Image (cartoon, rainbow, N blue to C red):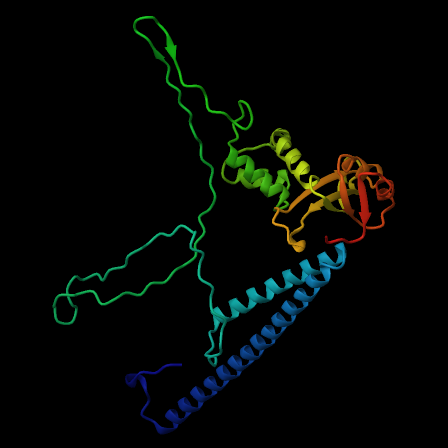
Length: 340
């Protein structure tokens, strides 16, 4: 409620009524601000509690293999995001003057990020007060983190043909190699599709919808075919990794259940992901660590026996019965733990 000197009444009783009305409005606003302050404080406490609970559950997750625990963590993180969003909206709608409190220092933005400088000069070249000349007196520099949306790009490969005027010989530069012979997908696009599917857990049909928003129609079946071709291309690297991981004198072996979609049934079945680790750094070794994964549709003992057929050394594993035939062989010594 605001008044100007021109519209104020001359009557004393009317002035008193205006003062009382103003005091009532101010009192109501103070009550609203106090309620908002209390609500924000309770949200801050709930946010802190959720953060502690999520941290505790994550620490428990390292010792427990539970899908239920993982889902619980995910739900808590979603609740935490909602609370933080509500808090930001409330502060933007009615900013409150709070007591200054120590805040953690904001980490510097990474140096490797590309930087774009924007210079903001005064509109007038002369002093706006007296018209004198302006000279540099330092500057204020602040950095803002921005995101440049990923975009598609078409690379056109042109190979002109040149003909000899004397002997009619035709000369042309050979076409550059491609990850997929005569395929239209470049290496960066293939790497993005693979990373999105296997690291970010984006199925191909969802990627198809995402790319369609940019006007690029990539069929999920076509991308699946690309993945198969790239998988074949990476086989030599996978084989080299397997040879190195199992080429040391000690390897740790384990397996974990993996839910796998079963076509035609609309449900999942349990596969197994076998992991073999070569890492002697805790024992003072300078050799690079390595991990090799192998997938099987079940947990039969023949799988680790086949994986370790060429391995010779110490196998560190649990008491799974499938490892028993390996412990009795001449080239493998099975132990629960060792550091020599």
